[in-house]
Length: 335
Image 1 (cartoon, rainbow, N blue to C red):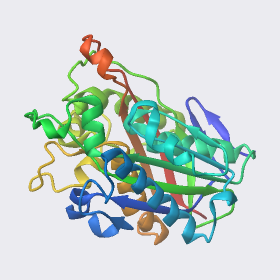
Image 2 (spheres, rainbow, N blue to C red):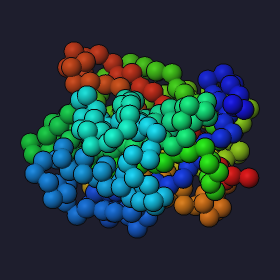
Image 3 (cartoon, one colour):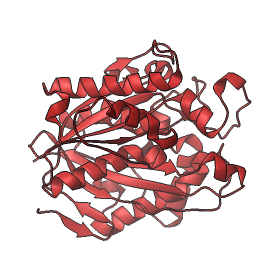
C-alpha cells in the first residue's frame, strides 16, 4: 500500500472509478441537470405500491446500470457498501437480500455518498478487495415521513427547509486503472453548533462542512485554488452562504465553489424551497454531472464534501441539538 496519512486525511494511489449508474425522480429530471442522469421516473411511486418500494427500485436500477456498463453480474463484486436515510437503512438492507456477496451498511445521513466512497476506497487501497460497489439512495416522501411529516399531511413548510432529492446512485470502485481515480479522502468529525431546528438543516450542517474543508486543506496543504471545483453536498442556498461567510472570516480565498443542493434544481423556479438535500443530492450531481466532465478532462480535480445531519425524530422531540458531519472525497483525472 503506497497511501499516506496526513492528519484526518489519506492520499490514495490505487483506487479508480470503473462505472456508475444514476436514477432520479421527476423534479430532479426537470431540473437543470436532468439530461445527465441515466434513468428517470415521472412519479414518486415508480410503478410500485409504496414509496419505500419505489426507493428500493431506483437503487436496484442504479446498481444494474452500473454493473451492465462493465458487463458484470452481482456475483462478480467483492463487496457492496451503502446507506440511505430510513430507519435501519431499510432500502439498502432490503436490496441486499438479492445480492450473493457480502454487504456492509453505513450511516452518515446525507453524507452517505462521500462516506461510502471513502470506506470503499480505504478497503481497496489496503489491498483487501478489488471490486466494491458504493451505493446510496434517498426519496423525498420516505425522508419527510421519517424526519418531519408525511407529505400527505400537507404541512406548511418553513422558508429555510431543504428538499430531499429523490434518486439513487451506484458506483463501482476498483484497483484497475481507469480515467478517473479517488485521489484523497478526509473523514470528518461530528460537529454540534447547538442548532435544534429540523427545518433548517443548512444552518446546522454548515459548521461541519467548514470543519472538514479546513481540515482537508490543512492536512494536504491545499486551498480552493487547487481544485477546479469544490462542492458541498446539500447546504443549499441558505447554508452554503453561511459556509462562505465562515470561510471568509478566516481569510480563506473561496473560489470555484458551489453546492450540490443549488445545482440539482432551479431553485428560483422549482418548488424546492432552499434547494436539495438527501443522500442522492451529492451523489447525483457528482456521478451524473461532474464525473463525466472528469472523464472528458473538462475538469481535472474536484473535491466533494457531502454533509449530513445526524438527527433522529426521537432526539428532536426531546429538544436535543443536531450533531452533523461532513466527509470529503477528492476525485481527479488519472495520470
